[in-house]
Image (cartoon, rainbow, N blue to C red; front, side, top):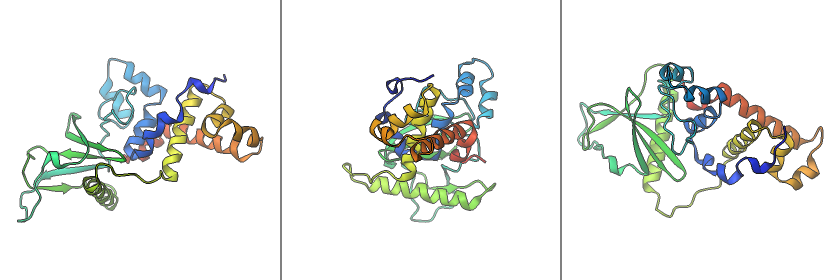
Length: 249
Protein backbone atom coordinates (compact mmCIF):
# COMPACT_ATOMS: atom_id res chain seq x y z
CA UNK A 1 0.00 0.00 0.00
CA UNK A 2 1.25 3.49 -0.88
CA UNK A 3 0.38 6.36 1.44
CA UNK A 4 0.78 10.11 1.23
CA UNK A 5 3.88 11.60 2.84
CA UNK A 6 1.46 13.60 5.00
CA UNK A 7 0.51 10.39 6.81
CA UNK A 8 3.73 10.26 8.80
CA UNK A 9 5.68 12.88 10.67
CA UNK A 10 7.79 15.50 8.87
CA UNK A 11 11.54 15.62 9.30
CA UNK A 12 11.27 18.40 11.90
CA UNK A 13 9.69 15.90 14.29
CA UNK A 14 12.90 13.84 14.24
CA UNK A 15 15.40 16.61 14.98
CA UNK A 16 15.73 15.53 18.61
CA UNK A 17 17.31 12.29 17.36
CA UNK A 18 20.38 14.27 16.28
CA UNK A 19 21.36 14.63 19.94
CA UNK A 20 20.71 11.10 21.22
CA UNK A 21 23.44 8.82 22.50
CA UNK A 22 23.62 5.07 21.86
CA UNK A 23 21.07 3.93 24.47
CA UNK A 24 18.70 6.71 23.45
CA UNK A 25 18.85 5.62 19.82
CA UNK A 26 18.48 1.98 20.89
CA UNK A 27 15.19 2.86 22.57
CA UNK A 28 13.95 4.67 19.46
CA UNK A 29 14.43 1.52 17.37
CA UNK A 30 13.12 -0.90 20.00
CA UNK A 31 9.92 1.03 20.69
CA UNK A 32 8.98 0.73 17.02
CA UNK A 33 9.03 -3.08 17.05
CA UNK A 34 5.44 -4.37 16.66
CA UNK A 35 6.07 -7.33 18.98
CA UNK A 36 7.47 -5.06 21.67
CA UNK A 37 4.41 -2.84 21.44
CA UNK A 38 2.18 -5.91 21.82
CA UNK A 39 4.12 -7.02 24.89
CA UNK A 40 3.59 -3.60 26.42
CA UNK A 41 -0.16 -3.79 25.83
CA UNK A 42 -0.45 -7.06 27.73
CA UNK A 43 -1.13 -6.75 31.44
CA UNK A 44 0.62 -9.91 32.63
CA UNK A 45 4.19 -11.21 32.67
CA UNK A 46 5.71 -7.85 31.86
CA UNK A 47 8.90 -8.61 33.78
CA UNK A 48 9.52 -11.83 31.85
CA UNK A 49 8.78 -10.06 28.58
CA UNK A 50 11.18 -7.23 29.43
CA UNK A 51 14.16 -9.59 29.68
CA UNK A 52 13.48 -10.76 26.15
CA UNK A 53 14.16 -7.23 24.94
CA UNK A 54 17.19 -6.53 27.13
CA UNK A 55 15.27 -4.50 29.72
CA UNK A 56 14.61 -4.89 33.45
CA UNK A 57 11.12 -3.48 33.01
CA UNK A 58 9.01 -2.69 29.97
CA UNK A 59 8.86 0.99 29.10
CA UNK A 60 5.96 2.73 27.37
CA UNK A 61 6.70 2.69 23.61
CA UNK A 62 4.57 5.80 23.22
CA UNK A 63 7.33 7.83 24.88
CA UNK A 64 10.27 8.92 22.76
CA UNK A 65 13.83 9.03 24.09
CA UNK A 66 13.36 12.53 25.50
CA UNK A 67 10.80 11.30 28.04
CA UNK A 68 11.32 7.54 28.30
CA UNK A 69 13.71 5.98 30.80
CA UNK A 70 14.30 2.39 29.68
CA UNK A 71 16.11 0.32 32.31
CA UNK A 72 18.55 -1.79 30.30
CA UNK A 73 19.85 -5.03 31.77
CA UNK A 74 23.37 -5.17 33.27
CA UNK A 75 26.01 -4.77 30.62
CA UNK A 76 25.04 -1.24 29.64
CA UNK A 77 28.24 0.77 29.39
CA UNK A 78 26.57 4.15 29.26
CA UNK A 79 25.80 4.39 32.98
CA UNK A 80 28.29 6.16 35.21
CA UNK A 81 28.15 4.42 38.58
CA UNK A 82 28.63 6.58 41.66
CA UNK A 83 29.51 4.93 44.97
CA UNK A 84 30.62 6.26 48.37
CA UNK A 85 34.40 6.60 48.61
CA UNK A 86 35.58 4.77 51.74
CA UNK A 87 39.05 6.36 51.63
CA UNK A 88 38.77 9.72 49.87
CA UNK A 89 41.74 12.05 49.32
CA UNK A 90 41.77 15.42 51.03
CA UNK A 91 40.67 17.27 47.90
CA UNK A 92 37.93 14.81 46.88
CA UNK A 93 34.81 16.27 45.31
CA UNK A 94 31.56 15.88 47.20
CA UNK A 95 28.39 14.58 45.56
CA UNK A 96 26.13 17.53 44.77
CA UNK A 97 22.95 16.75 42.87
CA UNK A 98 22.15 20.31 41.86
CA UNK A 99 25.62 20.93 40.46
CA UNK A 100 25.00 18.30 37.79
CA UNK A 101 24.03 20.18 34.60
CA UNK A 102 20.75 19.78 32.73
CA UNK A 103 17.24 18.69 33.54
CA UNK A 104 17.37 15.84 36.05
CA UNK A 105 15.07 12.92 36.74
CA UNK A 106 15.36 10.04 39.22
CA UNK A 107 14.12 6.58 38.25
CA UNK A 108 14.28 3.32 40.22
CA UNK A 109 14.40 0.24 38.01
CA UNK A 110 13.91 -2.30 40.81
CA UNK A 111 17.61 -2.76 41.45
CA UNK A 112 19.20 0.67 41.46
CA UNK A 113 18.51 4.37 41.47
CA UNK A 114 19.18 6.03 38.12
CA UNK A 115 19.74 9.73 37.69
CA UNK A 116 19.25 10.95 34.11
CA UNK A 117 20.54 14.42 33.29
CA UNK A 118 19.66 15.96 29.92
CA UNK A 119 20.61 19.22 28.29
CA UNK A 120 20.48 20.56 24.70
CA UNK A 121 22.90 18.45 22.72
CA UNK A 122 23.47 15.60 25.15
CA UNK A 123 22.60 13.55 28.19
CA UNK A 124 24.21 11.23 30.72
CA UNK A 125 22.96 8.44 32.98
CA UNK A 126 24.22 8.00 36.53
CA UNK A 127 23.65 4.96 38.77
CA UNK A 128 23.61 6.15 42.40
CA UNK A 129 24.71 3.48 44.87
CA UNK A 130 22.79 2.99 48.14
CA UNK A 131 24.31 5.02 50.91
CA UNK A 132 25.56 7.88 48.75
CA UNK A 133 24.14 11.09 50.15
CA UNK A 134 24.49 14.75 49.29
CA UNK A 135 27.89 16.10 50.33
CA UNK A 136 29.62 12.71 50.59
CA UNK A 137 32.90 11.97 48.75
CA UNK A 138 32.28 9.53 45.92
CA UNK A 139 34.10 7.33 43.44
CA UNK A 140 33.33 5.98 39.98
CA UNK A 141 32.79 2.22 39.68
CA UNK A 142 33.12 -0.12 36.68
CA UNK A 143 31.83 -3.63 36.10
CA UNK A 144 34.68 -6.13 35.92
CA UNK A 145 32.98 -8.38 33.37
CA UNK A 146 33.33 -7.92 29.64
CA UNK A 147 35.32 -5.18 27.96
CA UNK A 148 36.72 -3.22 30.89
CA UNK A 149 38.73 -0.94 28.64
CA UNK A 150 35.63 -0.12 26.65
CA UNK A 151 33.80 0.69 29.85
CA UNK A 152 36.64 2.93 30.97
CA UNK A 153 36.54 4.80 27.65
CA UNK A 154 32.77 5.21 27.95
CA UNK A 155 33.18 6.49 31.50
CA UNK A 156 35.75 9.04 30.34
CA UNK A 157 33.44 10.15 27.52
CA UNK A 158 30.53 10.66 29.91
CA UNK A 159 32.68 12.63 32.35
CA UNK A 160 33.88 14.81 29.48
CA UNK A 161 30.27 15.45 28.43
CA UNK A 162 29.35 16.44 31.97
CA UNK A 163 32.31 18.81 32.25
CA UNK A 164 31.57 20.44 28.88
CA UNK A 165 27.88 20.87 29.72
CA UNK A 166 28.68 22.40 33.10
CA UNK A 167 31.08 24.89 31.50
CA UNK A 168 28.87 25.83 28.54
CA UNK A 169 27.17 29.25 28.73
CA UNK A 170 23.39 29.35 28.75
CA UNK A 171 23.26 30.70 25.19
CA UNK A 172 25.82 28.28 23.76
CA UNK A 173 25.48 27.29 20.10
CA UNK A 174 25.92 23.74 18.88
CA UNK A 175 27.94 22.50 15.93
CA UNK A 176 26.37 21.12 12.78
CA UNK A 177 25.12 17.54 13.14
CA UNK A 178 27.54 14.84 12.16
CA UNK A 179 27.03 12.46 9.24
CA UNK A 180 26.32 9.65 11.70
CA UNK A 181 23.61 11.70 13.44
CA UNK A 182 21.96 12.53 10.11
CA UNK A 183 22.07 8.85 9.18
CA UNK A 184 20.12 7.95 12.33
CA UNK A 185 17.56 10.69 11.65
CA UNK A 186 16.99 9.51 8.08
CA UNK A 187 16.90 5.86 9.16
CA UNK A 188 14.20 6.51 11.77
CA UNK A 189 12.07 8.48 9.34
CA UNK A 190 12.44 5.85 6.63
CA UNK A 191 11.55 3.11 9.11
CA UNK A 192 8.42 4.91 10.29
CA UNK A 193 7.34 5.50 6.72
CA UNK A 194 7.73 1.88 5.68
CA UNK A 195 5.97 0.66 8.84
CA UNK A 196 3.10 2.95 7.83
CA UNK A 197 3.00 1.31 4.39
CA UNK A 198 4.81 3.95 2.32
CA UNK A 199 6.56 3.00 -0.89
CA UNK A 200 10.29 3.53 -1.36
CA UNK A 201 9.57 6.43 -3.69
CA UNK A 202 7.36 8.09 -1.08
CA UNK A 203 10.17 7.70 1.44
CA UNK A 204 12.62 9.30 -0.95
CA UNK A 205 10.33 12.27 -1.57
CA UNK A 206 9.89 12.82 2.17
CA UNK A 207 13.61 12.65 2.89
CA UNK A 208 15.16 14.27 -0.18
CA UNK A 209 12.38 16.19 -1.93
CA UNK A 210 10.20 15.64 -4.99
CA UNK A 211 12.65 17.39 -7.33
CA UNK A 212 15.52 15.09 -6.38
CA UNK A 213 13.29 12.06 -6.90
CA UNK A 214 12.05 13.30 -10.27
CA UNK A 215 15.63 13.69 -11.48
CA UNK A 216 17.30 10.69 -9.90
CA UNK A 217 14.76 7.92 -9.34
CA UNK A 218 15.99 5.19 -11.70
CA UNK A 219 16.09 1.42 -11.46
CA UNK A 220 19.86 1.47 -10.99
CA UNK A 221 20.06 4.97 -9.52
CA UNK A 222 21.94 5.87 -6.37
CA UNK A 223 18.91 7.50 -4.76
CA UNK A 224 16.82 4.34 -4.91
CA UNK A 225 19.71 2.29 -3.51
CA UNK A 226 20.18 4.80 -0.72
CA UNK A 227 16.56 4.52 0.36
CA UNK A 228 16.69 0.73 0.29
CA UNK A 229 19.79 0.77 2.50
CA UNK A 230 18.07 3.09 4.98
CA UNK A 231 15.02 0.84 5.17
CA UNK A 232 17.12 -2.32 5.59
CA UNK A 233 19.21 -0.65 8.26
CA UNK A 234 16.17 0.53 10.17
CA UNK A 235 14.56 -2.89 10.17
CA UNK A 236 17.81 -4.56 11.26
CA UNK A 237 18.24 -2.16 14.18
CA UNK A 238 14.61 -2.58 15.21
CA UNK A 239 14.86 -6.38 15.12
CA UNK A 240 17.85 -6.69 17.42
CA UNK A 241 20.59 -4.37 16.22
CA UNK A 242 19.53 -1.88 18.87
CA UNK A 243 21.34 -4.07 21.43
CA UNK A 244 24.66 -2.88 20.04
CA UNK A 245 23.58 0.74 20.39
CA UNK A 246 22.50 0.08 23.99
CA UNK A 247 25.87 -1.60 24.59
CA UNK A 248 24.26 -4.63 26.17
CA UNK A 249 26.56 -7.42 27.29
